[in-house]
Amino acid sequence: MLYLIAGIVIFLGVHSVSIVSYEWRDRTAARLGPVAWRALYSLVALAGLALIFYGYGRARAAPIILYVPPLWIRDTMVMIMAFVFPILFAAYFPGLIRTVLKHPMLVAVKLWAVLHLLVNGSLADVVLFGSVLAWAVLDRISLKRRPVRPSPTAPPWKWNDAIAITLGFVVYVVLVAGGHAWLTGMPIVFTR
Image (cartoon, rainbow, N blue to C red; front, side, top):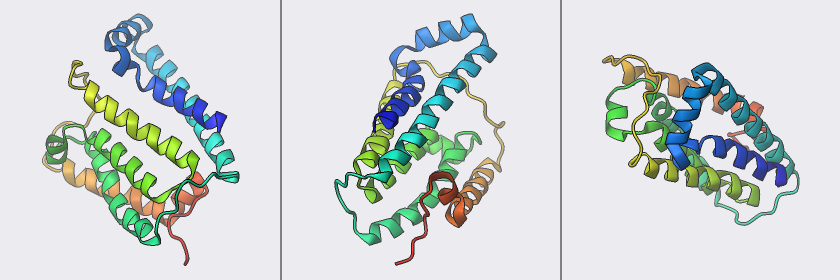
């Protein structure tokens, strides 16, 4: 569990720099330069992600079960997850979805975390998905007090929503067809 917690702290910590002090983040990024800042940020985030994968895998070997969700929740979750990836892609393809949701990436992350909390009841699951959910809520709240930083997106275009939906469903199908099992070791489609 220690590796999992360390990974979460590192991964969410680097993603929380702007939540804690966007001024410091902007000064540091300007001092290092955009390429060096992105490289350092990415290396730290990847190290955290690697620790999360390793720690989560170890914690799954001897799980501490907090609750057991009913089977129907799993099926419902799989269906609702079909919306998460189009919402996520809408963050990068500005259109009506992005306009309505304002911060589609955070909406997708919150939905992903809640759905995973509903179907996974071990201590490691609650720590991982609960931490990500708490981070996304805090990040959304902090966006109200910090200036908007431009992010790389496709140019506005009438077909951006269709692109986001198509790409999202492609990712969803790949994950359901075996990608999730390959990435996490846990298949999405279970036999009963």
